[in-house]
Length: 249
Image (cartoon, rainbow, N blue to C red; front, side, top):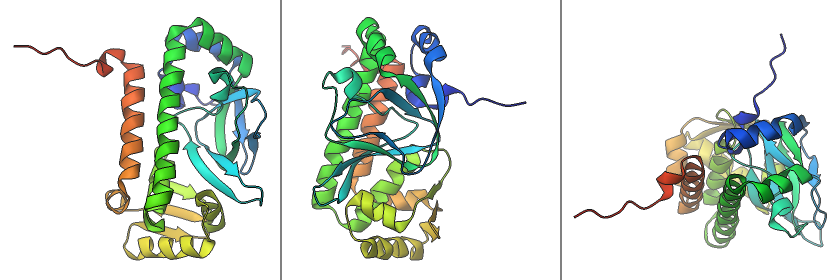
């Protein structure tokens, strides 16, 4: 018997109110997302919102000389296509599948209608957008102030948080492209982490074998981003959890 993956393997869909989820369910299309697939191009309005379950998507800025730099990653914690409901129509970034896998997509018009008609959907999507902006801001600060080893640790941890399991299929060339650095630098940093017993790397396959140690080697940027996602998505699932408690004498 064929088992169809549950859309609620995506954590954003998992906290969607039941009434809105049931309304979306007939329009949610299961999709296989291939490595390097472009989900939307810069300066073009997305036609669909994507909700990854086992895939990872990079939001990239491309320079005039062809160089790229990652500004955020999205996996099973969220969605790709916030421009659909933010009103701008398009963004200067592009969305590219970084790790192949599966997900679901929803027509842009369905997301726009839900955003306009359901206060719960609007609040959820805006909370996710706030968390995404926090990740982008922290990535910019990290790239400016922290060394490559710290950046690599942050990138590995953020990617793992958005995928099932503790392994990544990613070449050093692609990691270097995502971080906007030379491949030799990534090689040196990855070898150092491997010698310290934190990861195992071979032929594009990265296994994290000491996650607490990797977190210690990372800069504060990973913790800031994780805390913001946890805070906002927990608040979305349980609005009362986000409210300050009244003082009692």
